[in-house]
Amino acid sequence: MLKAVILIGGPQKGTRFRPLSLELPKPLFPVAGFPIIYHHIEACVKLPEVKEILLIGAYQPSEALNRFIATTQRELNINLRYLQEYTTLGTAGGLYHFRDQILAGKPSGFFVFNGDICCDFPMVDMWNFHQQVQTGDHFTMLAAEATRKQSLQYGCLAENEETHEVLHYVEKPQTFVSSSINCGVYIFTPEIFSHIGAVFLKNQADVFNGGDNINPVRDCIRLEQDILSPLAGAKKLYVFKTTRFWSQIKSAGSAIYANRLYLSLYNSTHPERLAHNNDNGPKIIGDVFIHPSARVDPSATLGPNVTIGAGVTVGPGVRVRESLVLEGATLQDHCCILHSIIGWNSSVGAWTRVEGTANDPNPNDKHAKIDSSTLFNEEGKLNPSITILGRNVVVPSEVIVLNSIVLPHKDLRYSIKNQILL
Image (cartoon, rainbow, N blue to C red; front, side, top):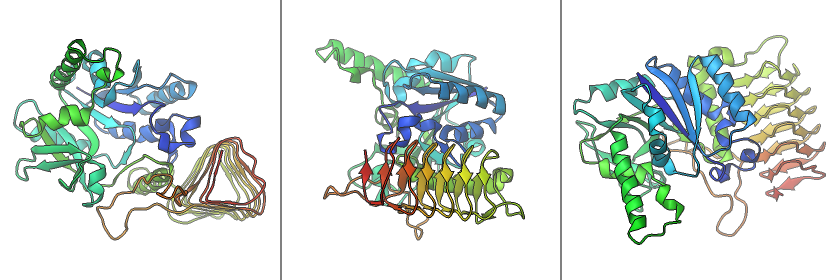
């Protein structure tokens, strides 16, 4: 029997995802029609040995989270629970704090996922690889290739090419180590808790040996630096490499890219989720998801890589490309939406153009990843990025909104460019 754990963080994390995370916990943000972590859970269900999935984070229980858990349990027929940390405990601290819940039922092992990734999760292949390693208790991590420059932004590992043992691991190194990067997906056995426990006891001992006994850092244990790095080279940690798509979802711009990847995956996994051209519907170009409750005028043109959420109204002549239109939004006649996220219940006026700048990986390098660039450049100016309208934003007719971020509940009256409207 196996379990899965998804680390979803807390409200103090994911600040680069604002203003979208102001309204909804980032793990529940809809990408390709479903919350980010729904794709993780759906991948776990494909492995019949997984009997329970635990969400660990510091978010306060909310109606949105409770509704998501209840709905997902019913749809996928899997036991799903949320375990709330009393404070931010780190990627390994949360696992250790809830070790009794994870080990209940005596699972032989458990998957651990970072909640802010999108991936064509190779669950079955990774589990088969883990079982084939003949070294007693061991752990497996998922890795992918990145460019030499971008690898410095991730955890990097060096492996034995024959045995696939991880010989060296460094989190975000200062100099080049390897182009193999940590994907934030792991398989652990119960033995991992002895390694995390040793770090926990050391942190506690440091407090009572003259350390700061009110410092909350003593409760924080980092999986990458505190656990994986010491395990490297000890014949305990092995790597399974994937050539399938993988990306982080750190910024709102990366949600557009993740939307494209998951929509493309639907062609092979869930073709029924994709819209198709018909005599009574809009013109569809490429991969498009339209929620059944959305109302889309037949004269509209959607795609490629567009998601239309629940209750959205799309008027005559509207053009949408490379964008997410969230629940309850209204796109009035002949407006144009490009590389943008239109927030919940927002309205875009007739003949208005809302456009952002794509933040895609280098198409000429198959190992290139999306750059989660900072909001401002060194001169303090706003970097060109996708345009984001927060919840309940009203954009009037016949204006242009370009490369801008509009916080919730704003009523625009004129065109804007390269601005953040607070």
